[in-house]
Length: 119
Ligand SMILES: *[C@@H]1O[C@H](CO)[C@@H](O)[C@H](O)[C@H]1NC(C)=O
Image (cartoon, rainbow, N blue to C red; front, top):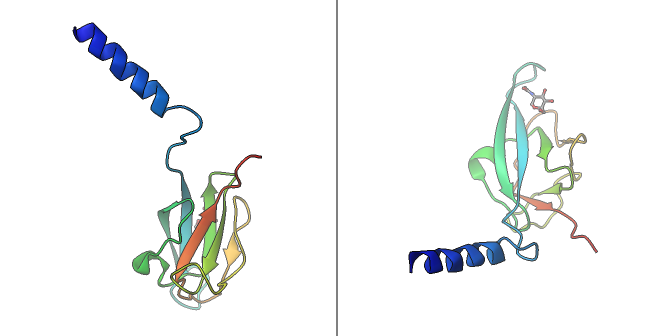
């Protein structure tokens, strides 16, 4: 009886891990904030951004100088001035290509990170 239940549960686990139901994906973004004119007066904060929806984080995105994407390498993120992922707020950024928004710090309303789906 126990063995039968276990087999059923294992089969269910295999189905949910099938490639057509990928796990929720996230991007790792470093927010660099400039606190003053001095080049070394900067701090970094790492945030986790879900792939897909417009991501809002008043605390972390309230003062942004540069945005770096640490991964995944296939993702691209774009900063927006509005919180619903509209009104372009800067260049898209991806791994190895940070987006400099300002030498001071500006407010970013939202981030949208996408990963192209394979054809
Ligand atoms: C913030 O992180 C980026 C990317 O890892 C790095 O290039 C930059 O020097 C860091 N800045 C500070 C102030 O630590």
